[in-house]
Amino acid sequence: MGDLKSGFEEVDGVRLGYLIIKGKQMFALSQVFTDLLKNIPRTTVHKRMDHLKVKKHHCDLEELRKLKAINSIAFHAAKCTLISREDVEALYTSCKTERVLKTKRRKLSRALSATDLRPELAPPDPFSGFWKENKLWLVNTLATATQKSLGRLANPP
Image (tube, rainbow, N blue to C red; front, side):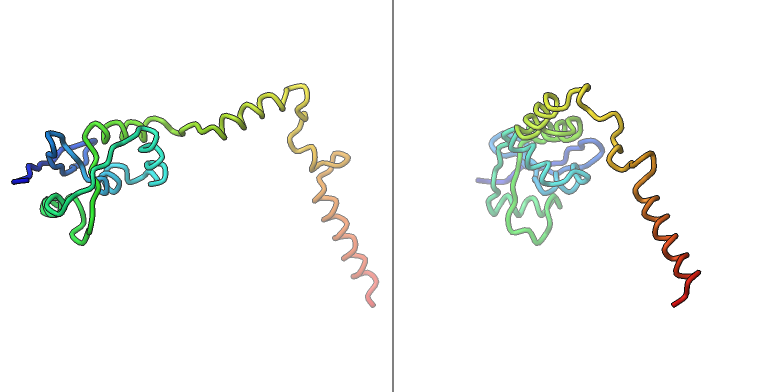
């Protein structure tokens, strides 16, 4: 395979190491997770990767050694996955701008809630279940308990 070309690219103030494989800049996915997308949960990033159909390249031994030499991955790493520059850009943009990926379940629940809850059927007060004769249930319970304890104090056994 020969000598691998490598370098560093700065993305949003973060320095990422890359390798040139088949004429493409390829970045270590672990470094993208830990340095570039560090405040975003991995499950979210993986969902975005699936949604964007990110292509992964699994490193061979020579690539793994080169990434360790340029400190892009941990020294003790046994394997590594690389993604292209275009995929890093798309993933970064998706994770930083789009807040939530809409799933079928969310679309379905929103559609149901919009049709089931009409303004004329909605209760006027969302806390109406807590109120009884314009008094809060807890207040009545507290007043009753206080009266019972005062009655015990007035009539000792």
